[in-house]
Structures are given as structure tokens and as C-alpha cells.
Length: 439
Image (cartoon, rainbow, N blue to C red; front, side, top):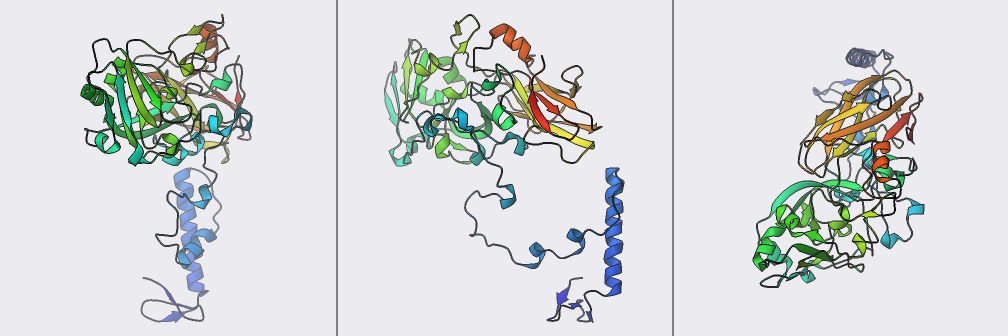
């Protein structure tokens, strides 16, 4: 049955017979319905709920009453206005210059494993290069039989592949080496995102140019003002690198390297050169600025590890966390987070509520893909007592996420890169959450 109103606000049934909007039988029926709904919710949740009518259920709301916006009313990609707080954010004292800085993915607001394109963190060394794809060129030169230059149209004629990979900046969690500093997983762990890339395997382009026998290394170069360059072993380039032009099905965003970027699965994000314009083949590493003065792991004795490309096994609980406190009080709750490994798949995630004294298996959910993030959940009843929440990931090769103490014992506290240690969140009895460290 459907309802129609006349000009006086009375309701007619589909037979045309009028009855007042506030007729006793109508009010009684609504009260009975609300009571039944309340009882049903109480039965399924295990909690006693007030048996009063909820006007959100029983009364007609504006979104039921009036027509909404049409299909052309919203700009591309605009979320609900009720989700306007879900956005990339920076840290003012980390931002020397916006053109050479970073913002962070709001991990605490997301679920699943795919990061929406507009929320993927940004890291720039010379600002965003705005390149017309008609003017995009990719040159392959150096120790090759035939130096080549590809247009975008050329590249799109090669066989393409789709792969879901995480991209993590080597400095992710870097401010936590000396102690707990940034209060929110968006800031401690937000230099990571996970998307589906579409592109041409780099090996096809190298085969087209013909790598000479002495060729052992690659030097990708970006077209941005910083001329970003990194040395990459040829073997990695032939194994799984992509020259990508799409992410999550659409063209790369400008801040993510539009129209072309390099994808280096499992390795630190600085090597994923954006606005890719050239790949040189050589017989030895170049030791450019970003792999000597930067992006090397400084050890306690002052020496540095020469090349540390792979992002080791890591995880973090994203909710609850400092930006996502517990608001519903004690009782049934779900803790969730992300885990990833640059070596392959995550096999298991454990969760502790007492600072690592006891561990329970979390539930991995969704696709389990190599060099991609994994979503985990831990379902439990919270008694309202303080907790020290931790997660610990283990990958398919048996590598276990270390504690901060274990990592510092091996490498000291002088580095800002490759911190994959276990994160601790202190949950207060009021549901608030703080970034802390266990000594």
C-alpha cells in the first residue's frame, strides 16, 4: 500500500479514502511497530534498549519528502558532505615548503584494501608537474642496442597488466624512531596507499630496445623540476616493474605522476619515479642525491646501509586510534587495521590488548595479494578497562614485525627510514586513544 496526501495534509490510502494523519489507529500502529523494532534490535545486539519510538524511523524525513539533486549536480569524486573530514592532511612543522613536502592518507577513515585516488598520500620534491599527455615522451637509452622514444599512444599498444600494490614512503613512521611523537595513525603511518595499477611491464620496453650484455642497472628519471632519479637493478626491472598510466581504473592523478609513472612493487616509494620521462641502462649504480644524502639508513655508529630497497613486514591498527576513539562505550567492538610486506603476502596478523604480553589471531578479510596491503579485524568485547593495543604481522616467508626495542638494538635511533616496528595505542577507560611507547 502507498500513501497520498491531500491539500489539508490528510493521508489517503490507494482506494482514495481519507483518514487524518494523526488518527489513533495510525499512531497506535506506528507505536507498535517502533516497539517491535526496538525489541528486535535489543534481541540481536544483546543490549537492553529503551522501548520508545524513534522519530527517525516513525516520521517522514526530508530525504523521503523532497527530490534530491540530479545527476549533474555534484562535481566528480565529491563524497557526501557528512564525510568532508575524510581528507589528506599535512603536519605544519614537517612542511618546510609545500612544493617539497608530504601529506598523509587518512587510514583511520578507510576500510577494505583499496585507497581512493583522491586520498592517496602525496610526496613531492619539486611540486606537481602538469604534463599534457600529447607531449609525454619516454626515452630508453644507455647500454641498449636501439635507443627508443615512446609516446603515450605507443605505450598503449603494448600488452598491459593490472596489479594491486602498496606504495610506502621509506620515511613512513620515521618520526617515531626516538619516541612517540605524532598522535594519529594518519600521521604515524599515513605515507602508504594501495591501488590497482594498469600499465605495461617494463621488461617489454627493455626487450624492444635490446639491453646489452653489460647492462645491469636502470636509472629512471622524472620530468618534474627535481629531476628525481634512482638506481634500480636490472633484475628488478625485468621481474615485476610496470610503466603505469592508470590507477584504480582511471588515469593517474597529477599528484601521482600523470600521465606516466614507474611502479616498483614492494620497494620504497622514492623509487617509483613519477612523471617518468627517461630510463637509462648502465653497468653500475649512479649513486644520485636521493640514494646518498637521502634515503639511506644511518646506523648508530655513523655508517649507513648502502641499499635498503624492500619495505619489510609491517602493520598498524587504524581503528581505534588517536583520531578514531571509542565512542560507543564498553561491549562488543571491532578493531581493524592494515598489514603489508614488500616480500610478498601477509600470512597472519596477531593483536594484543595488553601491550604484547598476550596475542590473539586477527581475522584477515578480503583479497590476499602479494605486495599489497591486507585488511585485518579483531572482534572482541571491551570491558571498559584501559588497553594497550598492538598488532604484529607475519609474512609468508616467516618474517615477523619487530618491536621498537628489537629494531633499535639492530640499527640505533639515527635513521628516519624503514621503521616497521610494532605500534602501541593506549586506550583510556573513556575511549580516548594516545600514541605511546612501551619500554
